[in-house]
Image (cartoon, rainbow over all chains, first blue to last red; front, side, top):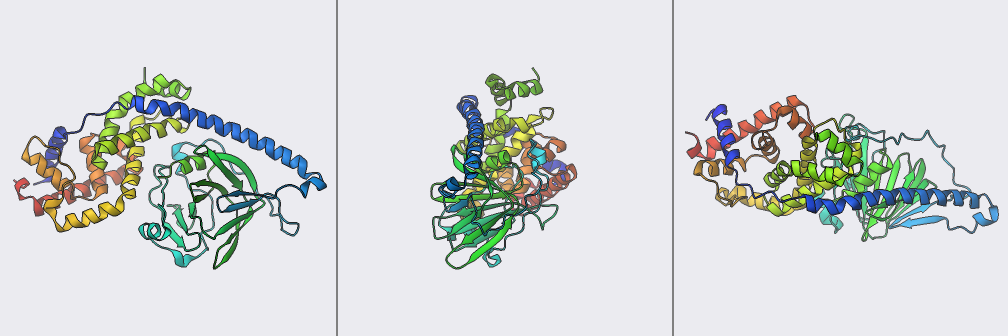
Length: 262
Length: 182
C-alpha cells in the first residue's frame, strides 16, 4: 500500500468512526464559571487582607517591646516560614522586583530565570513510577501550562518522604524552569528564613507565596541542607501532603499550576 | 457574532457568550478526547475540564487567535496526564498486548466494514504520539498550521512527524495486516 492509498483509507476510516454522541457540555461547565470568578475574587480579597496584615505587622514590628511578643513563624504542612529572623541571621540584599505583568499562554513558554539545580541529594534521582512507589502517596503532575509535559528530573528522598519534580528550560537545559516538591507527613522540616511572605489561596485553601532571596534550610533525619533561594515559592497543602513550587513565574501563574495538579 | 466578539464578551463575564463558544467547539474537543482516551466518560470529564480551564485563563488568551487549537492543546495535555495517572495499569496491559496481539482491543464499538475495523486495529499499534498527529490530521481534518498550535511545535516538525507516523503505520500494516495490503 503506498502513502496515497493509506491516506485515502485513513480518511475513509475517519468518516466511519463510530463516535459516541457528543454530550452537551454547557450545563456541566456553567456551574464552575461562577466558582472561578469567586476564586479570583477571593484571591484579590486575600491579597488585600495580606497587605493589611503586612502593614499592621510592619507597624507592630517597629515597636521593640511588641516585636518580641509576636509569633515568629507560619507553619504550612512541614514548611515553617520564619517571618522574623534571629538577630544574628544575615539579611540578604534584595534584588529588583520581578516583572509580575500579565502573561499570555505563549509567554508562559518563555525561559524563566535561573533557579539553581537541586543539590539536596543528586543520588536520589529516579523515575516517576519508582518515585511514586517509594513515596507511598500519589505523585501529582501539573496539567498547566499545557506544554509542560513530563518532568526532566525526578528525585526521591527518604526523608519526608519527598518527591521532587524538576522541569528544565528546553533552550537552556542547565536552567530550571520549575521545581515541585511533594512532601509526605514524615520527619522532614523545611525552614524559610525571613522571606517576603504573602497569604494566598490554592483551591480555596490557605497557602503562602514567598519571595526571595532568603535562606532555605531543610532538616531531615539524615541531613541538613541550606541554600539561598532567589525565586518565588508557593507553599500549600492538600491532605497530608505539602507542596512547594519554586518558579520565577508570577503568583497568578503559580496558583494556576498548583490548582492544575492531577 | 464572531468568535473574537464572543471571547471579548466572555472575558467581561458574559456567561452566555462562553456558552455559545462551548457549544461551537464541544464536538471536536470531545472527539479528540475520545480518540485519545478511548472512553466516553473519561472524554466527557476531560472536555468539561478543558472548557473550565480555558475560561479561567481567558484573560491571558489572545482573542485574535482561533480558539479551537488552544482548546485541543489543553485536551491533549489533560488526556496525556490522565493516561499517565493510570499508566502503571496500562503499561501492564500494553505488555500483555504486545505478547498477545489478538488481545489488543481498545475499542469494541463496531465499524461499518471490516477494512476500517482492521485499519483501526493497526492504528492502535502505532506509538501514541504518532497516533495523535494522525487523529488531528485525518480525523479532525486540521491543517498543519493548526496542528502546530495544538502540539506546540513548528510546522516543519508537524510535517516530519506526520510523515513518520504514516511510515510506521504502513510498516505495521505490511507486517501484520495482510488483508489491508491490497
